[in-house]
Length: 158
Image (tube, rainbow, N blue to C red; front, side, top):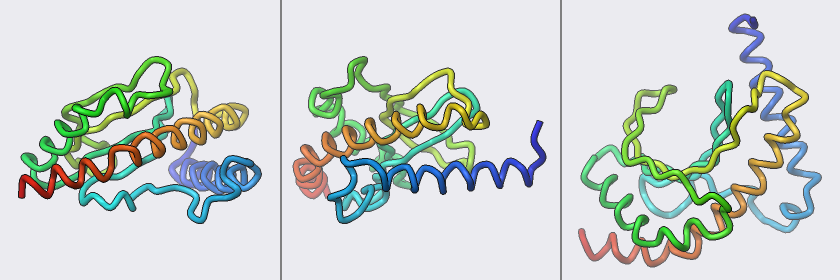
């Protein structure tokens, strides 16, 4: 078992190494900004990486504080499920309700996950890094295909 301080250091090391790993990937070399993440241009919608002890996830998350708006965004995205799931061999997991462990926030999320990996094991980091890169690139690409339509639908319901 690791102490709290050791976990913190390992976590920091994981993300620093991920950044370095990304810098060596040809698919990322020509991008102005490495990842979209919180800059989706839709309030309350973000793309995220998430690590747990037994899996890693790439997530499209609806974080709006107002439940009705959060659910509205989720329902609009559901209409474009075919586009969002393009290139994901097993589709995506659509979670209508999730409470985040880090801050207790209630969210909706759409994600893919790599199971049976433990980020505490450094020998598994390359597998997690490749999963993150390949799936975030795909998630971003698919999201960008529907982003403007989703924004328009949201504007029409205000």
